[in-house]
Length: 195
Image (cartoon, rainbow, N blue to C red):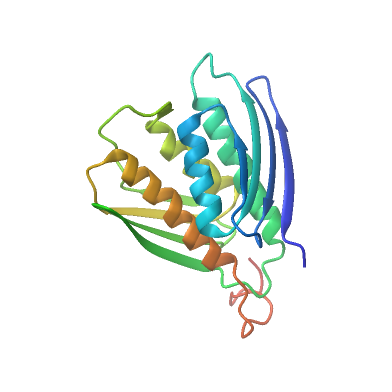
């Protein structure tokens, strides 16, 4: 089964092309126009073993909001499409990821019900050319368009780059676990019979 998705989204604010392979090797080809955001998406692809190609032409002359949020919408939609009917997948995934002084937990449930919760609070307005308030907007968009529960807990950290990067990498590891196949699962992992 080929677990891939090719997505397009065109608005007056952004033009996005995104290709995702859940069963890749961690290859990334990225150009969002935001260097630090590309760095975060590269870490997501590499540590989740996802192949990810993203091209965004956004209204960065305004700010980075539309580019980051819309990329989250498209990535969440691609995850939902690529995972398909969810038969035979683990559904749940979690990771506690250390990055130097930062320690971040991410937990995912591909439940078909969107929910986002996080206690991440950044103490600087920007990391590189990414507004830190957009980290929440990105993951919120992924969770809702991907129809998943997505939770983050920040246990420790002082370096804002480390905290943010640990969030993206922990999400990658948790999602990789959630989409992985388990031979013991027949159908979908739910007493309802569907997700």
